[in-house]
Figure 1 (cartoon, rainbow, N blue to C red):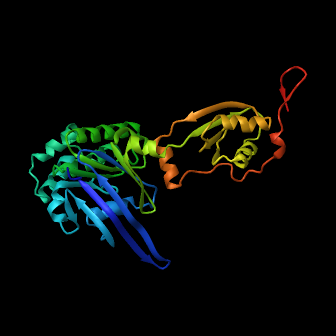
Figure 2 (cartoon, one colour):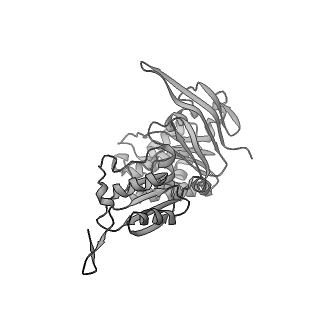
Figure 3 (tube, rainbow, N blue to C red):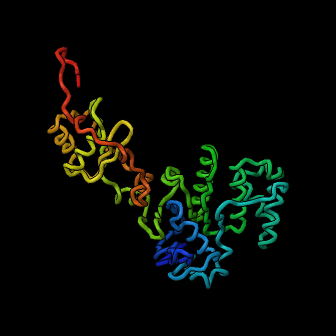
Length: 333
């Protein structure tokens, strides 16, 4: 079956006084039919540029794009009626009702009037259809935006940050709506910063960084392919964590990150090695726990946006001295 969306080698450059900036640098993406596909990337990575290029709002400098098997941008008029999209924040006239808003959009787009009550039912706004939009919560306005994108009964629905600014209840409603649309046979391309939601709702993901694809596939595959052995390490109270981190790094640990009360050690094949190294220096381990990677940690690792804590702290080498046993048998320093 032909993928709903195919992008290959997509390029977009901008010229400025500082030179040429590559917003998209050979970007690739494939979205299969019937999926909810998550499109992830940090600010400035090229997500919105990609979506605007797909919709003909930006002209690319190179590469290939296709929707429903039709090459873009030359065949965009042929497939535009089968694509619904919300890119960036939707705006509505506050004094119009939801019914008025959708009726005007349906008329402008040549859509039958009976689609208005149908989409209001789908997004759960039927009972508030005659209320003015200015009385709506942010979540209701987002659902109205989705309703406007559904008027054409699209085969592909593109949503750019649909949960922006929503409270947990609104996010849950949006998640339920996306799943309902997918189960009805619609393909959804969902751009979002809420990575926990992406992991819950999406069948597959593409991660973009600096205009290039850095990961793609089912959520399970992306997690498996990028999962590293990460161990949470706690030591006995009174030991300087930064000094312990430096000790592990000097012994060969590939990645050691300081948290508030523990260390995160990645890339070590045998967790027992950590215990061995610290024991050689008289440092007692209080906890050694493997951490299961989630989509957020994989995203931060792939895009290089993970914070580094404790970078400016000074190492107190005396803190690595082994703890002493007092005459009473308790721990002393």
